[in-house]
Image (cartoon, rainbow, N blue to C red; front, side):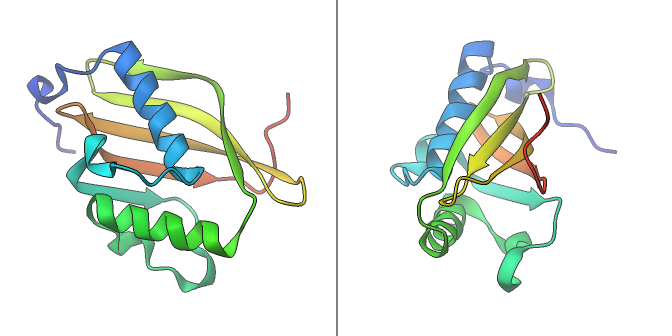
Length: 138
């Protein structure tokens, strides 16, 4: 296992981590503006489940790549609404932010998921994302 230098995470504070997760959620809600402000140039996303409809998600690179993926995803699924489920947990030493979230589909059905963001130099560099088949029970 390789580790990233802790010096690259020195800009991550709890408030910054929470703000980054909120901005990440806004992206999935269709706010495609200025992705370079919060996503690193070498951004990558790793999904834990198989992509739907043959999407090649492991090939998504950079802010433009995720904007293209989210745009197409939302176009095929109008009316989606993502929300943070709880307060993101921020590890300022490792430079990571984790949080549960849920999405409400157009028909009202809800699914939960968990995302782990790695933050380098104040921007999200990698996301690991797993979507469940239902909403987490209370």
